[in-house]
Length: 276
Image 1 (cartoon, one colour):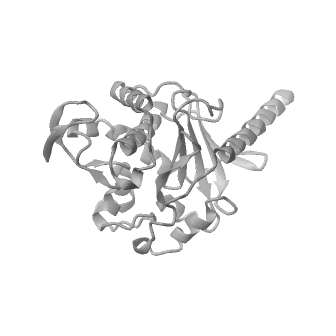
Image 2 (cartoon, rainbow, N blue to C red):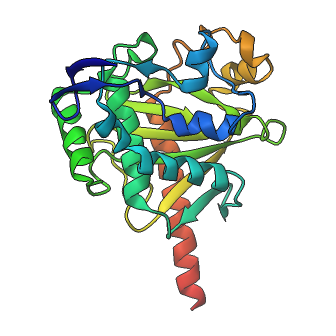
Image 3 (cartoon, rainbow, N blue to C red):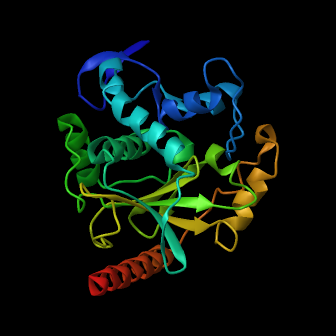
């Protein structure tokens, strides 16, 4: 361990190897002693692939451990709920959970975003927050405060496929830019889109204290289908990291999908009211 300034608390302390992508993801796939079978775009050493990239210049042990309960909750949740049947809204299905832990779920995602922004690792070079956004997220994490749904709105989805549903929960990709100021993380078959501001904020679809809505969308026919299938059909040890290096998703596609879902939700709620 080296002595240096922790970027989270600002104090000079012993810095540890901080996992940029939650280590809980990799532990959950590998288990205690088993080999790691993971589908990624990383063509790095086995050590990096099994730990999700480690930065030894980022945080002290105390600060890094402060994220553990959030990240353990997130990983356990997305692993256990990936195959849970969603409710149907027209041609769309979505998992709706009114009993999830908003605080732990959201802070786990924000902690991952903050580390990805702060690290100098090239795999996360396109995760660039404004200074104000980075400081606000750090303060929220320090205070254990997830904020309201309009504070860094997060949209959640599950990638589904009749043929590859066994492999998608083992898929972890580099984060990508979505539009001008949003970022996407794809972890264990789940998609998380985090907005730096609430310009693209759409109520009733993003994470909130009242409920989690995870919109299901099919891998087949999606813009990411070609790239993801290249990964899923390859030996995890021989994947070319160039496959998704420039993967970009236009923000209008995401917004359109959310609008369609909200409209379907509105129609369904009105039908229920009419029946009563």
